[in-house]
Image (cartoon, rainbow, N blue to C red; front, side):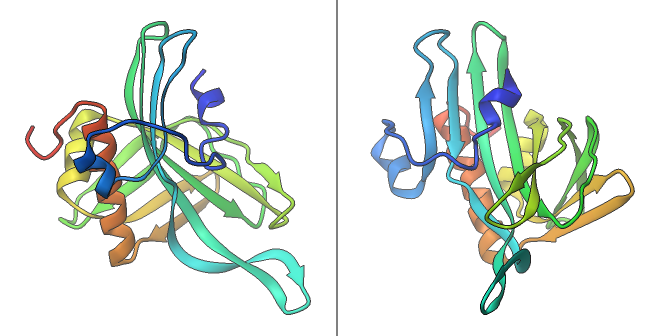
Length: 198
């Protein structure tokens, strides 16, 4: 169920939603919807690029197509049927070679206060992208409530993904750090949490 909901997470466009004016001014959401069949609520921040620009394997007359190193989105899902009430961090990364990532604590986020936290991720085998000639991996991680408060209080400096036999580190620049922190606060407040005042 979760994999199905997040399968198109980074491909969806903006949908209609109603939030207080204070949140609308600062927050951009890809979705804030309630499923009419099972009342599952899904809040997803607008996906944002992180890391550097990298060359893809798609060749143009001017050389390889340049793409984002990764994209990230923060989300909340609440449902009566599946008893899901969780926050998620989803990172989409293009990879040059086939990688294998199993379920486990294979995604680590490093905070500005020099601490690092491992997140529980779902397995993924990637999907081939014709636009880049690369496999796109989607790392969907459960964010525990204590980590949610840390993400709202401190900037995330970098994200490390541990594939089987390879590590990938994505460093965020200052603007990306602030944007991710704002997305965490916005999604939390839209879900009825106050992450800055635990």
